[in-house]
Image 1: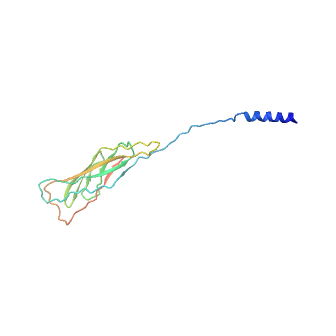
Image 2: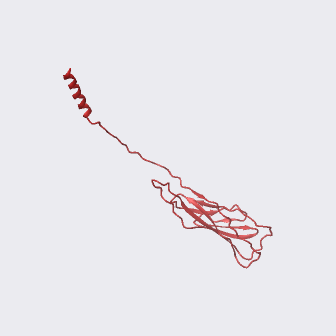
Image 3: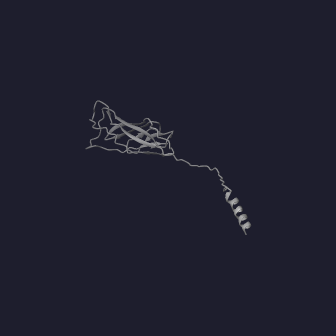
Length: 166
């Protein structure tokens, strides 16, 4: 019995002394995405001409306003144009600068939206989602001198739309 016990103990020590086997396997895969680029526009302030005196000698210049867009980083081919929905309004075809005209209170005016310098966003990193590009458009306007206008009371308002195409 002693011999059997010694044989069993020796055999179990042999199996216990063997190191455990370890293995791994791997496989490659693609990460894919289809990005749809977009721009959003913040609130645009009023383009205010102030007070125009009938038949005034000089051109009336509006206080400029800014339309700020937040866009996908690196977006190219951006153009802009104004609407033509307001009575007497006109607009040039979409281009780098938006150009338009209109009539308010019987007074002609010209408007332009000019893109400013793009503030580039930051690329995403392992610890950050990244940020968008900021694209400002300065909107300016002027009214020619020597216009009669139409009698009206108080401040007159006309809604215009700046459309940015990308």
